[in-house]
Image 1 (tube, rainbow, N blue to C red):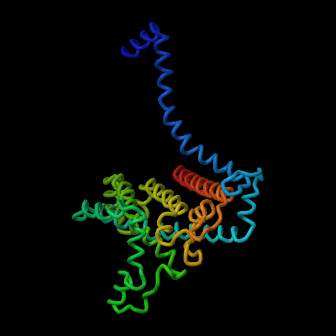
Image 2 (image 1 turned 90 degrees about the vertical axis):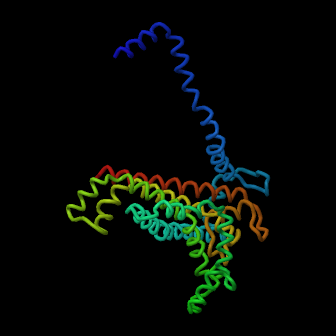
Image 3 (image 1 turned 135 degrees about the horizontal axis):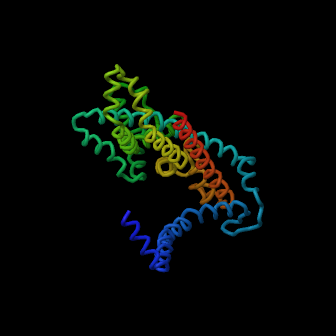
Length: 318
């Protein structure tokens, strides 16, 4: 109370000085806002602007409104390739959620249960994340080689010759192989997120539940998962964004054409091929590529916002 009174007296004595300091504090966010506007807002606005023009190579042509969007969704082969890549992105997301995050939750729960060597396991799971995505793609491309790759050699040694196949050359297995390689790469990050959520749960609450006879899967379903919902939301949104931005690993393992036969094409790879030209000398279409970038931005932003809104609403209902 005495400090407040002294502060009020000081403000009355020096109103000009206080006002200047107060205004100066509000200038601190300006550098951060300038960087955000330059590297986030400007590229998005530029992509939206470019999508409204007809481009002749790198030369901006006439204003055509939504012509590039209409072409993307109605003209072959663009519309067929778009929906093909869109379906692959959803498959990417679903498989990551089931395999990567399912295994990551199980590993985090085992570590949380005070298993011996828990710190060593955390380091071991996170080590692949330290590698470059390009290096990961190269290593898995070697291991999945149909002739001398580790996967087929191991299957032959186990007497499972009928299971061997050209994993990246078969349209039925190529995308699945890439997603599973990505799961190996990203599982350590998911383990850390789930572990942070588990460690935030009150031990007293869990002990009280055990005394009441709640154990095993029932404990996980009815107690642990609801109390670590923030971690589940974070990893779900992160996985969704990552799946719809999937580019580096696909490019490293299958190139810009989404080989074989566009079976590994994603929206980001499709965008790269349109905007910058593919490895087979495709023509550059900046307007069409910008239209695809805008569509991809709205897909990720809209679905992420809807998911966050749904989760918040469920939390408020509970």
